[in-house]
Length: 379
Image (cartoon, rainbow, N blue to C red; front, side, top):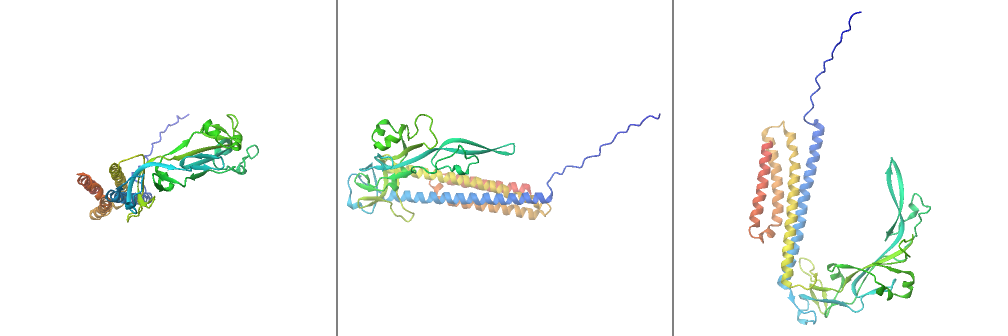
């Protein structure tokens, strides 16, 4: 028997792995990069413009207040200040306060906010082994959860309505010393506080309320014990207290209102007693810092956008050096103009800080020149 020959197969050399993406994929990726870079560049410019526009208006209003406001006493009304911008400090007060008729609860406050929640079934869905699994739990919610939409309705029925809804109540007789002032002018400037119900407060409520509810601080609740049942209600409150404030506003006879200016209405309320110049200096510093932060963020966004815009340079590998260089410098010119436009928007802000303007423009030109040099090297 002839011996069997054993042969060995030679491995054919594998095809070289392409170092670059196919032409169509590369072109599509580059186009997406350009679009994304353009969006970032535009978004950065819009952010810078918006931020500096807002800061500019605030600075003008602060300067207007500094040049025109007159410090006066809240305890007496001076007719000579009628229709002028005044600055005053004092304690807010209200004779009648705010009253919730549904519960019979009254507070000496600027605003009273009531939140009403019901204990209800809630359906959740999660995917297990390519199938939907429906689970049910009991939660407090200030909105009605419609159990008619549940997958398994039996045993998970919710009441159809709340006994009454959440609401807010504002005092209509607010005073700052001798002056009348609207709740809408001051309520956003005073910190809202939660009302923690006590047994003493509960004892002052009407008999009908006390027969239905009990105290489980900070709530009033219809639940009996520590385990509420479906349909139980709990009520909580938050108040804007009659606090001490400092305010810039127009004296309109016996009332304080917003002061009309060419830059927009001016009314400025701060909680607590403050010196006028202290408030103005603090607001100017904060506004300037915020404007610089927004401007810095916008420049960073535009630089990132510029990096994406440089991607098309690779599409011109087979063109002449002059065309590639012209294209690259065109991108640098666009980037430079965008950065310089943002710089112009907050020129006035940096000018208020000694030396900051020179440093900023030095850094800006360094960024533009380094970007141009990088493009030149890449080409």
